[in-house]
Amino acid sequence: MVLENNNIVHRQRGENQREDRFAMLRQVLNLLFMVGAVAGLAVYFTKSTQVGTYIILFSMVLKIVECVLRLLK
Image (cartoon, rainbow, N blue to C red; front, side):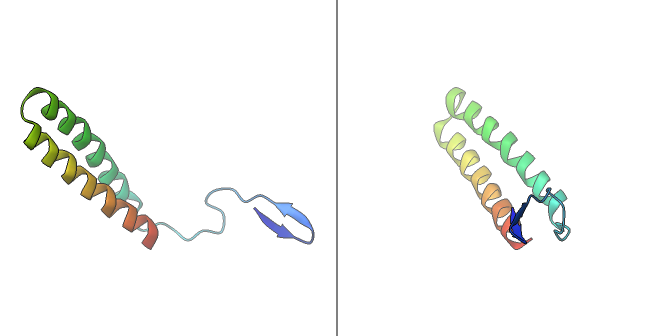
């Protein structure tokens, strides 16, 4: 939302924004994060809590990398 000549102008997503060069990589990282989180929970509750915790922590690292890429766009 931008104020121009005392009128509020709503901008649509994608308008006047530079292209996100990391979009595909971010989508892949998000997918890996979601799959890893679900797999980690499954392992945590069925097999080994220690291995499940490691899988979930690795998934969280992927999410942090995705967030950093989002900030760098």
